[in-house]
Length: 99
Image (cartoon, rainbow, N blue to C red; front, side):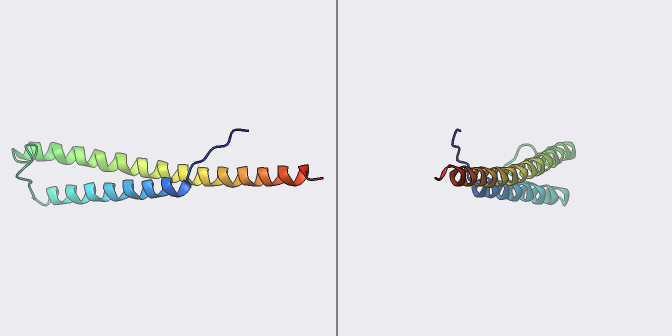
């Protein structure tokens, strides 16, 4: 059997980072909706249509980050369960092989 090593806690931390990034994007989108404009950004310094397009892009980013976060949480859970099953199987095999 091939040994594998994946740290479910690392996947969970990555999920938290993605979730926080999604929150940051959502907050930025809210600021745009409330009329905030970034002077450095060519995308929001122009017309209201540019701001609306940028806001739409941020909405899409929030949605994508949310989906990615959910997928990572699911993967962390599956990896945790796979690790436990692997450990239980190895323990059972060790017990069966002892004289």
